[in-house]
Length: 215
Ligand code: S3P
Image (tube, rainbow, N blue to C red; front, side):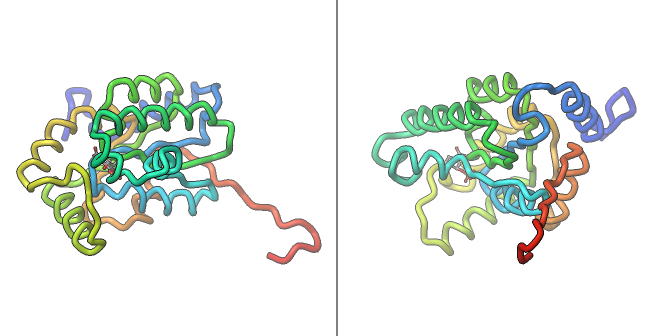
């Protein structure tokens, strides 16, 4: 897809991200990445692969919410509703952003987190790169419904295929505000992770083996 400038949208997004990462001086600059995108986009699996390639830590925002709330995401939705879940999500995100000095980290956000205006504002103010993992909505639906059936797990907001598609379409413009956008269809998590490293110029943490230590 070409813009009038002649650059592809993706190339433009990546040069914007690179420009901003060289400008960064704040905490978290260069050592934190947030993955965003719809349910089934592969945020957790790509996040894990990316953190392994970089020797960074990996964290899933939903896991932090569950620890803080002492109940599962599905329970929060069922017992307290989506509004309460979004509050818990925003507080957990703020908690992560307050702690960016905690070390190099890849963080996967839940599918609705980046869509909330207040969360996007928090992330932009923190000057951390956000990566939108995208795929065709039909593929996202296949992945999510298959996962839910295999795990026998309750998945809030999965709904019918028509509702899923409507939600995806309503959210896509928000995801596109991320620093970079990466297509994931028919690509392995390793290939996607390697592309993120290249686009954002991320640096691997080299582990040093001290004398006398067994590798
Ligand atoms: C949600 C996505 C879920 C989870 C919650 C709400 C959403 O995360 O945060 O069920 O609003 O799209 P995943 O995208 O990791 O499934």
